[in-house]
Amino acid sequence: MNIDEIFDYTSFTIDREPHIILDPLICAGCEQRGCVNSCPARCYSYNEAEKSVTFVYDGCLECGTCYIVCDRNAFTRWRYPRGGFGVAFRMT
Amino acid sequence: MKRTFQAIVVGAGPAGASAALGMARAGLDVALVERGNFPGEKSMFGGLLHRMTSLEELFPDFWNRAPLERHIAKKGTTFMTAESSFHVQNETTNFSRTPYNGYTCFRPRFDRWLADEARKAGATLITRALVEDVIIRGGKVCGVKILREGGILEAPVVVAADGVLSFTALKAGLRRPKFNVGQMAVGVKALIDLPKEIMDDRFGLSGDQGFANEYVGCTSGVRGGGFLYTNYDTVSVGLVVHLGSLRESGKSPYDLMNSFLEQPQLAKLLKGGRLLEYSAHVIPEGGYDMIPELVGDGILVAGDAAAFCNATGVNLEGINLATHSGSLAARAVIEAHEQKDFSRKGLTRYKALLNDSYVMKDLKAFRHAPHMLHIDRIYQEYPELVCSMMEHIYRIDGTPKSSISKLLLRELKAKVGLKNALSDVFTAWRAL
Image 1 (cartoon, rainbow over the protein chains, first blue to last red):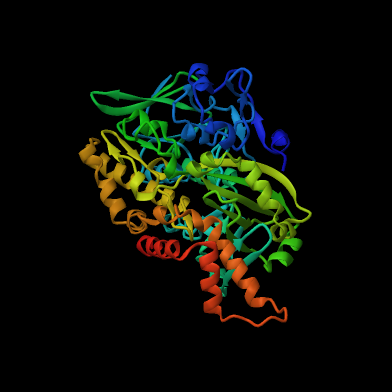
Image 2 (spheres, rainbow over the protein chains, first blue to last red):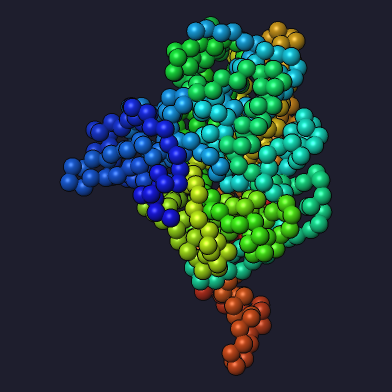
């Protein structure tokens, strides 16, 4: 299983705006970055040079992991996608 | 848009749909609010549905009506290392007789069916509706705000069945704003297709018989375990890992998953299968100690939102507790309507009903199980011990054999340490 091919396996209806927004100042001061390794869909990445964490919402499974593992409440927004958007499981 | 109902249920999963179904059957005008395009679109689980007596009360021939895959005839546990495995299994024809003990199913189909039953009974199903806030007046919850159409739904009572993160319970002040990472796990799952005939041969099944297997030792030392459940012509396989331990390990769920899928004994079982879908979700594993406030003025909490999940290490129960709590919430709401009292006091009946049911009794009885599951040695050293013991016992290599007790002592000393072993036995004894 290659997580980078998630769009081949799982369906998404992508909204125009993200449902999760990070506060870059809080993330810049975080040494732990549990979101980066714990996210099952690899939506979070860390840029060593810029000392910044990026969240890409397109392939978010809406599982809740980042909401739990972030100790700093670095979210200026954390909600589920608007009705009708986001991940759409067919079977699972 | 503003609409008024006699009750609002947030979330059309097993807890919410059960609650709405119970209320609709009693003639209440109830709204069942769901953020997905259809109920079940956002739902995932490992794949094993335990027997649900509360649904059998509503549907005496539940197994003929619900969209189920297979009934569970066989249950097993495998202790696993990167190279070896030791497997124990229970099979009985008793589990192939109705009422079945458990089933495999797909949540997008099952949740949709149950919510549709609620709709047929008279509930108003509102989909594509994300609840963004609860409306509180005079300290009492009296409705919800929908994000998309800016719609407002009002009712004297709201049931929060919006899943583990329950923002409805949060906004009503019933759950703490911060979860304890030590009480949470994440489940990741791959759905793999395999032709029915191949699956029946590989797993020793016939007809609608299904197999449910749990794995220990397959998580590279991270607290957690694996599962494999047979659907009709697909296999659900995945891991449940403790979030505190995962975060600390620096490992990723999909890497752990790949190591699991590549373990030689598991890889053989899945050979030729193709990945159809990948999904993940957080699980409230803290048990009794993490249950939020269940009742407030004008609000009740049910299912995962109430952390009704029993992870004892043997069975992982959730949906059965969800449907049961949903049905009890319906009863409490029906009685509150009879008494015209939707205050915290008027709805407290819900707690009494829960306390009298297996939901609270089991959660209380296994209150210490999460402590046992925090013995990290369970996830690596003990499976290694079991596999290496068995290998020694079965191996014939021309050297004199040690007695099994000597062998156990030697392996225990080498892999775990005697002091640790004694302390683990004590913890496990207390927990179970």
